[in-house]
Image (cartoon, rainbow, N blue to C red):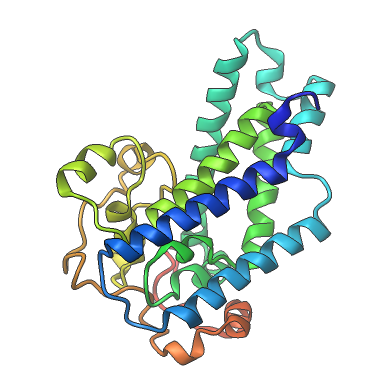
Length: 275
């Protein structure tokens, strides 16, 4: 690889992740949107602990990343965009948008199929909503998500730079839109036309089923409006809404070991759209 960002891909991704995590944590400290209901130290240990496990698992088990897939497909002339005449930067932009659509559909699928919802419950079982909730995903879900991204990259022929930009944006926006931060209504109203905001995504973490199964977007907000899954506000208001899942309300049970076991021993409730 002769593109400087690609040569240092892990460092670029970690740098953006760590920098935005610190910025969002500082914002939460200065202007929190909601008071936390559970121990912040226990939650942060569990949420950051599981993202550490996710990262180690991917590095150990998956030697061929989405970026490697993009490079392979480009060299072999495979994938749609590698076989049509298109400007390089347009190819990059198309790749980012297509990957974002794929993640939206993947997210809806994990809510729709009970077997996949079991994995995704780890994310939704958090009893509070803050920046670390944005990285609280079960390792098996992360593994499956990587597989889906690799298939999309291969079939569409997305460029390696497009994959890197998307991965950085996905991490950044996930940390942002899970932030427990105060955002002026006038700013949020405009901003949510361009990116998923905390006010928009918080609805998705409501204990109410119809709200949980809405606002699936992580980065671009357009897909929810296009596919009819957009919900503007929670019924109980942002300050009074209950975060989490109705079947998991004991904070003592939401420790790191329990989060890893949850898909295998936890009850799914009536949340899966396919149930």
